[in-house]
Each structure stands twice: as structure tokens, then as C-alpha cells.
Amino acid sequence: MRFSQMFIPTLKEIPKDAVLASHQLLLRAGYIQQVGSGIYNFLPLGKKMLDSIRALIKEEMDSIGAQEVLMGFVTPAELWQESGRYGQYGKELLRLKDRKDNEFVLGPTHEEMVTHIARSFIKSYKQLPLHLYQIHTKFRDEARPRFGLMRAREFVMKDGYSFHSSYEDLDREFAQVEQAYRRICERLGLAYKVVEADSGAIGGSGSKEFMVLANCGEDTLVVCKSCEYGANLEAAKRKPRQSPKDEGKYGAQAPKAAFGEFFTPGVSSIESLCEFFKIHPFFTIKAVVKKAVRESQAEGSRGDIVVFFVRGDDECEETKALNVLNAITDEPYLALENASTELLESMGLKAGFIGPIGLEGVRYILDEGLRDARGMITGANKQDYHLIGVDVSEFRELQEAHYADIIKVQEGDLCPHCAKELCYAKGIEVGHIFKLGEKYSRQMEARFLDHTGRAQNLIMGCYGIGVTRLLPAILEQKSDEFGCVWGEGVRIFDVVIILSNIKDSEQMAYATHLYEELMARGIDVLLDDRDERFGFKMKDFELIGAYQALIIGKALGEGKVELIKREGLQKRVIDANDALDSVLESSSVPKNNAHTNTRSANAK
Image 1 (cartoon, rainbow, N blue to C red):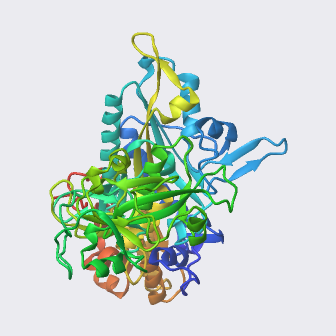
Image 2: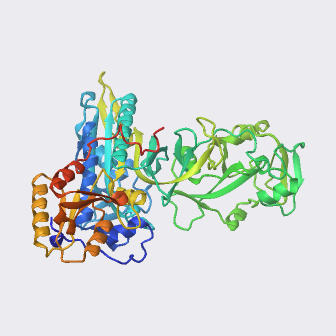
Image 3: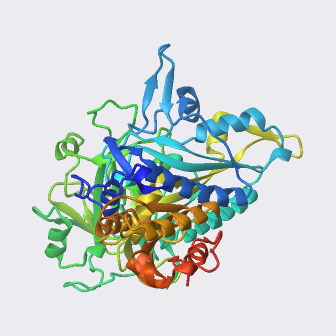
């Protein structure tokens, strides 16, 4: 393609309200145009890069036997009603009606649609396993679209779904897809981490996320400094604590006291409680009171009060808490919200003095780490009183209470695998894989006949990659102060030929001949034939991020040209007669460098 004929509307100024470097660069380099909140047009460069990433993903998915389909973007609401997600998904699900008042949704994900395909055609175990995938537009009505393509409302995702006759076969496919996703990240040259994750609105178990490591990432990861363990903060675990990780100003010994009530006037926070008794917060029980809200409850209703108890120096992880709560309730809750003091008072709860002993009429859950706690201090459910000398295992009501892991792992906690220190890192989620099991097939009656002739629910897996999100993810890791850098795996052009003076007949003749030779050999080449200053054209090369540039200038008279690789702006002077071979050699992209790439954060 000739630059003079290509539509590349570059901008010199940083666009207003574009915060992330990737968002600024995609707009400035003419890859995308914003047309609404979280909605973007892909211009020729953007579509070209999107197609390159799509082709790479398709190649890896096809290599493991997955088959590409294309499902409807508009999905009948009745399918979502069958699965139970129509009322559970929340306001991110865009619902609409046609002229006949039939209800539809714009698909944010396609579990229901693909399960409908499976139940329509799969009848026997002999048809299994089956893995279908699509690369298609999705829509989620994000409350706060931001950061460009990182959190848009309309986006392109590769979503795949597998069907199996056994959980053993699901495990095999899950592992195979994980390896394919690793190869995709490695071929893109990304530093990434595979972490344990929460399944969210998709459901199921065995959830793993593929996180591109970047300081701008919205997700906080918990990673081990010594082994490969990593998890999203919402799913992270730690080795059970035996004692305070730091002694603090009052030491690390449990207070010795006989069980009983103690008058604590005005002592309503963990900090003041520790100061009052001169103890470490590890030996206190903190009440985290939340209002649990269901879809069926009217907006503004008081909801259901739930109390989560953790140690005083721990924090309650809200997603964990909500998942645990939903696991023990018939009708799931959508969210946990802060409960007002007025609401607590209306239910007879004493803010600052709530404890699990003697707490009546309210559902409560205790963190697993409190199960055998001794020498604890907790609220007495009585104004200005606490209970001291509490040995949790001695109370029958607490023996029968519900315990679960609901704490937020903190930096310095110990790894559940190797017992070394954990720390935080930031990441951009680009992929997520799930073991759905029978969640959708049971609800939607998608069954097959096993080898004995008995009807069984299909066993499912789900595998997603954010295709449009990969564009900013790559740039957040690779871009520099001059513009876009895409690396080896995907290229906007293999080479751009830049003439320093298009009016020089020798330069133009040489550039045109080389351009035509490269085109004939299938090389993705851009000839910058614009009548612009050389510096102007170089800045566009750097901004757009073509893989390399061949500079044709005055040195051509001496038989020399310059080849500049965009990543790192590495320059080398070569013979003009060797330029064709040099570009051909540098333009070859390895199809699968998974075994040689060392950029993965998982590599030891």
C-alpha cells in the first residue's frame, strides 16, 4: 500500500480524557475513533491489527481441534431465562424488545446460545467431545466505560465452549486450552501470569485468568515471590496463620482472661479496642456488616443483613464473601452493599459491638481462620460491652456456624504452596477459562445418551480471550515515548519504505522497484510516498509502530540504505543491493515460538 492512498488520520495532540498510554496512542496513531461512551470505530490500521491478532488466535484454536462458528449477536431472552441468568446478570446485560414485544439481549457471552446448539444436535456420547468457538462482537453495558479498549461496552471476544461425556475429558480439554492460551501470549511477546480466579457471572469452577503484567492493570494479583503460584485478589488463598505476622506495639501473645463481659465505654473500633486492652488485633474478632441485595428486591429496599466475622487485622474480601453466601442460599444475591447505621439500629444491632456469640435473627458467616481461635475478644451485642476470653471451639452455636475462606490476602502473607512471602502485582485480564460442569446443561436440559443408554447432562468448559483488549495490553507493555510498539508476534506492516526526498528520481525508482518486489513476495509493505518532510514521516513511522523502516536517502548514491527496527529503534546500515534479502529475512514470523520465548512470567 502507498501511504498517500491509505486512510491513516494521525493526531499530534494527546486526546482529551485519554488517560492510559495505550488509549492515547491508538487514537493518535489513527487506529480507532471514539463515537460514544465505550464504543469505538476501528479505522483501517485498527482493523488490520485486529485481523492479525484474530488470525493468530484462530491458528492456535484450530490446532487443538476447536471448530469456528458464528452465533447471533442478538440472543432470545428466553434462553437466558432458561439458564436463570436473565435476572441474575445485573444491569450490564442490555435487554431490548422488537416491534412484536419479543424480548432479546445483546450477548455479553454465549453460554446459553451454544448450549442450545448442543442440545439440538448432540444426542450420543459418540459425538463427544466437541469444542466450538467464535470470534465475535459482544456488548456489556458497563457503568463506567474507561481506558479506551481496555473497558469498552462494545468489544470483540473469542469465546469457546467444549462439551464432554466425563469430567476427566473436561480436565484434558481445559489443560489443552490453557497451553494454547499460553502459546498465544508467548507469540505476542507478552509477560503474563496465569492465576486462579473467581468465576463471576459465568459460574462453574476451575477458573483461571491470563493476566498481562502492567502497572496500569485494573486487577490486583497475589503472586508468590518464590514459586509459580498466582491468583486474582478475589480468589487468592494463603497458608493458615498461626500467630501475628508482626508483633506490633503490644506483642504477639494472646490475652489471658476468663470468659465474661467487659465494660468498654465508647470502644467501638478495632483500633480503640486494641488500645483499650493493649493487645494485637489478631486476637480480636471484627464484624463486617453488609446489606445483601437480590435482583427481585426493589431498588432502595433494605435488603438482607449479613454479618461476616474475621480477625481484627484481616479484611473481608467482598467477592469471596458473596460467593460463600450464595452457596448457602436458594436465591442468589447480586451484590453486597454497606449497611447504614440507621438500618443496623432498626434491627437491634449495636454498631461497633457486634459479635457472633448470642447474635440472633441475622445470618452470619465466620472466616475459616477463626474456627479454633482462642483468647479472643469480640463484641457482646450489647452497647459498650465486649466479651473477653473467647475460645471459639467451646461454643456450640459457633461449632455449628458456617465457616469459609472470606479474607483478603495481604502482602506478606505466606504462599499456600511453598510458604514463602506473597506480594501484589497489577495485571490486565486478557483471557479467562472455566470448568462449567453441568451448570447450563442441567438448567437447559442439554443431555446425551451415555454408553449404557442412560441420559446424562452434558459437561461443559468455557474459554474466553478479549481480542480487542489485547491491543492496549500489548501497547501498555511495549510502547515507548515515541509511539506504538507491537513486537514480533503481530505487525501492522513488515516494513515501511521511507524516502527522504521523493523528488529525487534515483531514490523514487529504487524505492518503487523494491516496493513492487516485496509486494510480489507477499511482504506487508507500506511505501511512504508523501511529499512531506523526512522528520515528519519518521515521526509517523514511530507513532504508528510499523515493524521496521527502510530509509532511502543520500547514502543511496554510495550504495547504502538504513534499516531501523521499531522496537528499541535499532539501526543498521546495509548495502542497497542486499535490502530485498534483508527485509525478506527479517519479515519471517515464527509460527510457534512457545518453546523459545522466555518472556512469560511463568518461566523459571
